[in-house]
Each structure stands twice: as C-alpha cells, then as structure tokens.
Image 1 (cartoon, rainbow, N blue to C red):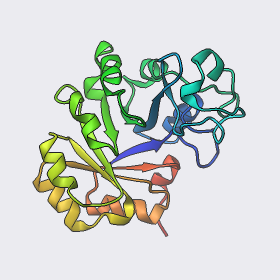
Image 2: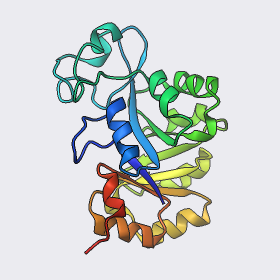
Image 3: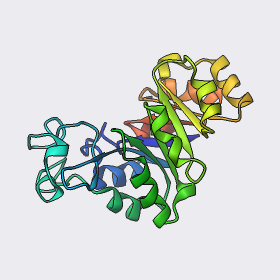
Length: 223
C-alpha cells in the first residue's frame, strides 16, 4: 500500500504543510509518496500551497494570485521554510517517490503537465482534482486520479477520462467500491486516514494507497 504524506507530514511532529521540510519529514517517517497542492501566483509561477490565501499556513496575509513569488517566498510557511515552487519540489522529490499533485484551480493542468514532462517524471506523478474535466488534457502522458467526497458517477467518469485511479474520502469507501474499482482496472487511494486502526482496515480491504498527515503511524500496530 502506498503511503502518501498528505501535504507532507503536517501532523506530528508538526513541520508545516506543503513545504520542502514537511516533504522531507514525511519520507523520513516512512511515506512512500507525497501529496501536495498547486496554484498560480501573480507573476504566473506555479507554487505549492493548499489555500487560496496565505493567511492560515504562513505568517503573512493575502491572496496567492495577488502576490508574486518574490513576495510569497519571504513568508514563513512552517519552521522557517518558504512556500516552494512546483519546479523545486519536482526537482528534489520527483525521482525519489510517487508524487500526487492536486490542482487547486482551473487552467493550470497544461502547465503542470509541461513541468512534469520536461523532467521525464510522467511515471512518477499522478495529477488529481475535484474538477475532473480539468484533468483531461493530462491523459495519456500522465496518470490522473479523480478526487471526490461522494461516489456518484466516479467509476463511470474515471472510465470516460481514462483515469488511473480514484481518490475517495474515507467515509464513502466500502468493500463494494474497492471491488468495483478493481473490476474497472482502477487503483483506489483513500483520504485522509490518520487513525492506525483505519489504516489497517483499508490495507486489509485492499486499498492501493492512503493519504495521511501521520506517515509514521502506518507502521504502528492498531490496538
């Protein structure tokens, strides 16, 4: 089972989220993949951050799309680490583990795809989004995963878009869903799983991967 560090390792011990330090910590804790989020800032560069503002995750304030990278990188995104560029994350981690890149806004899929292909990382990356149609231009060069907190149409949409995987919320995952995904040739990666007992449950059900804030817990036996 693939253990994706969800935004790195933001749980315990805390290392911020979506930072180079957090990604390094996730791998140190046993993650075999990294999940992170991408947006575009004011000067067009692709940056790794979840929210559309920097208020929650840094010591600054403002909307990501209103600030250029020269301004963004001056803020502390956790333990002294700045908001990273997508290019820097790909360069450091692209050949080390599987990367799940979540597109947090429309219209950036083609540019993300270009960055990945330039580095020949097509087989090291999954592009994911809640806006499924945004992923269409990535296929067939780059695998895609459909994110959802519901089950409606996800299998049929995955077939239509030639997706590699579905990424459902943990609360909607059932043995039937996993069996149906298997029959459709789809991998299933579950989010966000932080309890060791749930980790064991999804492993036993045959999930291909989980997203977690606590990668080190995956090696802790459930009581």
